Amino acid sequence: MKWSKVLNSVQIPAIGDIKTAEIAGKQICIINDEGKIIATQSTCPHAGGHFSGGWCKNGHLICPVHRWEYDLKTGRGAEGQGDYIDIYATEIREDGLYIGFEESWWSKLWG
Ligand code: FES
Image (cartoon, rainbow, N blue to C red; front, side):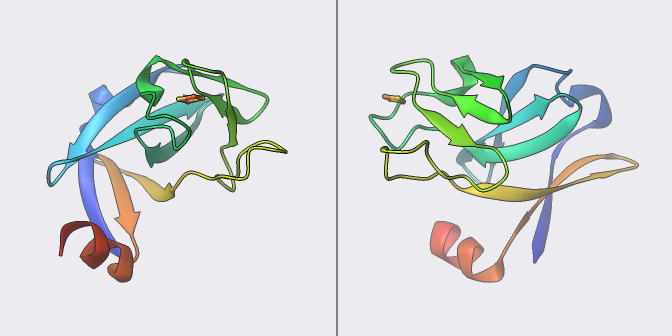
């Protein structure tokens, strides 16, 4: 696992907020769902809506464009959608929020 710091402690989103952060030129969304920090890809696989304008409901991320839903634990789309989003590992350390990527993902995304 390769860990990268994405936010300072004071930048971590408050409960219910979604922030966009960037790692090596790639955007990701940082979500605070009832105190749990989750990192996902930033755009919706349906038609490219940006999740930063979305919201959380019952453990799901709702896309603001057509309101498709994604499970925040597994990344799976709701029944009938047949799609999924990437969920990245998160760790809050003393100096901020770190995101963890599998080495194979890292090389796939950034070479
Ligand atoms: S673009 Fe996200 S639901 Fe359509």
